[in-house]
Amino acid sequence: KLMYAVKDHPYKSVYDSAGVMPLDSASIGSIRYADNRNAMYMLVGVDSGWKLIDSDASTAAGGGTPSGSQVQGSAYGFKVGGETPHDGVSLNVIDRYSFTSDANATDYGDLTVGRGSYLAGCTENDNYGYAAGGYAPTGNTNIIDRFPYASAANAADVGDLSHSGYGKAGCSSTTHGYAIGGSPAVEVIDKFPFAASANASDIGDFASSSRYYLMSASSSTTAYAVGGNGHQSIEKVPFASDGSMTNITGLTLLVPTYSASANSSETHGYTAGGYQGSPTQINTIQKFPFASEDATSDVGDMTRTTANQAGSNSTTHGYVHGGQNPSVVNIIEKYSYSADGNSTDVGDLSTPTSWYSAQGGIQV
Image 1 (cartoon, rainbow, N blue to C red):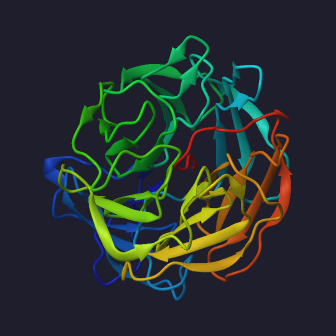
Image 2: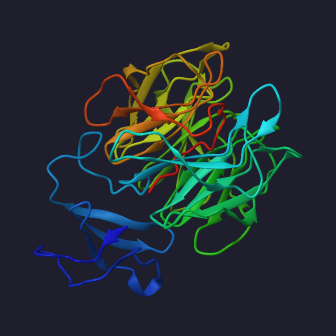
């Protein structure tokens, strides 16, 4: 949530209320001061959203100038859905854990139907978390579920994806959620609005072949498809215009990686763990920059060698939850965005057998 109180800033306009930044045509060109980020933003368009224009912050999570990315939270991360391996049970549990203190997660609510095998996770600023697609007890699903951040409550079905399947990942702009890839193998990039309950539209394809069990990242302007089955490349599509993804020449993961955690700071995309090529589990934390899109680096190790986990993003850390090694684990761990290094174990999920939960980052 961005505070409208502008204080003493050279570009100020005076607002004294708190709430979600407006996204209407009448507000295009207006400037707001984000009190919780100590930064100025301008609304450049209803679809493209708010863009950072000035910051008083001396440092930013991940290093460099803040991008104003909408995909970090300051209070809680969420693990949504998942499954119990080997018995076909898909979970409907929504877990919530704290960013401000290391502690175990608590059960926050339920999905409309249990789903696992990687559904797409999206976040609508400080309002709602979304979970789309996945594998349900009755088979592949295209359901888009939404649950509120303001208070513990069950999710509601608000629309359908164009593709029923699992192995997806999610990206989030300020106005739309994206569910990318999936199995049965498709090149679908599904996009759905946050402002109204509605079905998703297929807006394009991958630059390469279909991807599933992929990772994702979201900057303030761009959706990234990272790795996936048999893939080492990283592709992108801008939030401002619909269309197919393009391959980022010269930018790849260190090794072909899939079923890893996906994380986003304001300046970098990350993967943690996963499978390397043939199903060999790794513990590597990989990082690539949004601004230069020039190189991926190994910045640390997870506490465990594992795959089939997911994650969420605070303003300062990437969080990784669940996974398998070789049995399913319920660990929550975190690693720093501001200083490269290994992750630490900070708590446990409420469900001891949980993997393949919503991928893409759900946090407030």
